[in-house]
Structure formats: structure tokens, C-alpha cells
Amino acid sequence: MKQIILTLLVFFTVSMSFGQDKYQMKKINYFVDAAQKEFGLNKNQTKELLDNRTAYFNDYQKAFSAAKNGEISEDQKKTQLSEVNNKFNKYFNELTGKTWDELKPFNDRIREELKGF
Image (tube, rainbow, N blue to C red; front, side, top):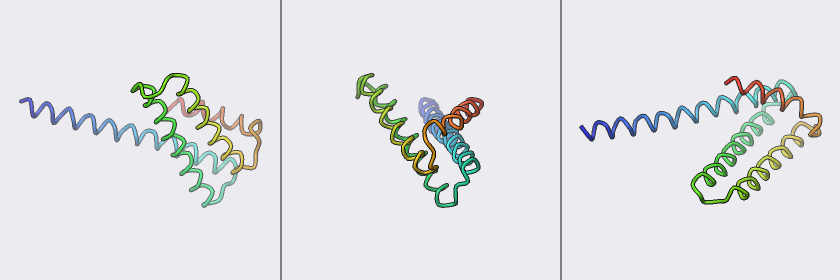
């Protein structure tokens, strides 16, 4: 009986983990598709954006996990998140050829749309 319960627990944990990854990839793809349409990105730029947005998300999650596990302080987490954001924003500015102020309406719109996911 214990083995069955343990097996089911492991199964549900793994399933939820994959489900969460799938959910996050859906959000990443939504962002990339919207940027591709909004800024007329070509196929190579779109692939590069997908890679960078995925790396951005993974780095963001690492900082949250490290803080949650007590590996870094709250201040260190804020610093790391700021670095991750700045790195992605700089890349996105260069990719689109737009300034932060020009990208702000797009970012605000996408943030609101992703809340519905």
C-alpha cells in the first residue's frame, strides 16, 4: 500500500512539473509570437528571441528558487532579478531597434494579456 501511494505521489509530482513547464512555454511562445508580429521579426530573429526569452525565464526561476531555498538573501534575489531583467531588456531593445519607452506599450499590453493565461 505504501508503495502504491509513493508511486502515485511521484507520478503526480512529475506530472505537475511537466505541466508547469508546458504552461510556461505557452506563455513564452505567446510573447515571442506577439513580438514577431508587432516588430516584423524574421525567422532567425524569432528563433533567437525564443531562445533568449526561455533563458530569461529560466534565470528568473533560478533566482526565485535560490531565495526560496535560503541559498541567497532577499536583497541578493532582487539584485539577480534586476540583472536578469536588464539583460533581457537590453537584448530586446537591440533586437527590435526600439528604446525602452517605445517598447513599454508592447510590454504592458503583453503583461496584461498573459495574466489571462
